[in-house]
Amino acid sequence: MKWQTHELYLRQILASMIGIPLLGKIWYVVPAGSSTSLYEDWVRNDLDIPAELIHPGNDGLANAYANAEAYRNDVICVFPGAYDLTASLDWTKDNTHLIGMGGPNTRADYSEKNVVVYTDTAAVDYTIHLTGNHCVFKNIGINNAGANAGNFAPLYVDGYGNWFENVGLIGNLVSQQLADPDCASLILGTNAHNCKFISCDIGEDCWGARSGANSGQLLIEGSQPNGLLFRDCMFRSRSETASCAMVATQDSGYIGRSWVFERCIFNNFFGTGAKPGTFCNQVFYITDDYYWPILLRDCAAFGYDRWTDESQALIYGTMPVADDGGGLGISLDETVAGGS
Figure 1 (cartoon, helix red, strand yellow):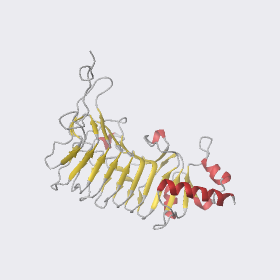
Figure 2: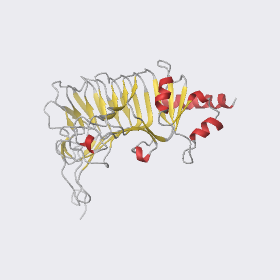
Figure 3: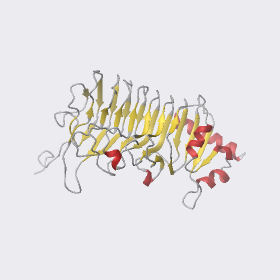
């Protein structure tokens, strides 16, 4: 009876978190039990969860995913820890969901673990390669720290209607990634239609300086994914290479219709120590031949000269003019700030 009581209560909580009233089977991923991780002992003994639903250790997520069923709203719950994958996890199953059990703050890399799935194995292209549709990812960090230019990103999205909330995405963690324009913290493919990113952190500004020309922390590699929404997201980067952008198209990538960035911050740290450096040229490097407009609603950028220098990119904004582009951060010296 103990497990049935706990399961009923947990289903109610998860249904409220995910926004789906009827869930399928629930799977549990925990770090291997130790003096600094008591979750495995707790779920096995205190909660009395059946052993076949519990998947411990670095292989736990892959094993739980292998057991989950598509089209059933199965949920994988991952408890706090840093889970090191040695191969890309191909997430192909529709209506399967990944929920971190460590709380909503995922602004941390795998060394500061809350709930983080990562790889530091060379040539693992994507930590998670998502082609499933209508999946929910919430309260989880995903990193890619492989020392290889083939470690492209923590997440590649090529499925439609997916929802990401409080998700931290960090690539470009080591020198090989930082120098390669094909590496990013999020890559979108052709089928990433109508995906929504809510209160997500994309990129970082501490591990090293990006130098790949015309690169981005967000890369669009597919052909015209439509309907992307980024709301209350923080994009972070460190670079003094003028041609480094934050959002970029690569190869045959094209921006699609109805892209909206709402209350997002694009923050590029520049300089070394106490010495300020040089702004990068533009937030958006969009060079495709399709003239789909991008709407910025109440957004701000710092560490960039302009929103875009590309004539093909149509950037529309609702921000008051802080600089000639609107919404670009400027230095508030004592005169501007009203000081004497």
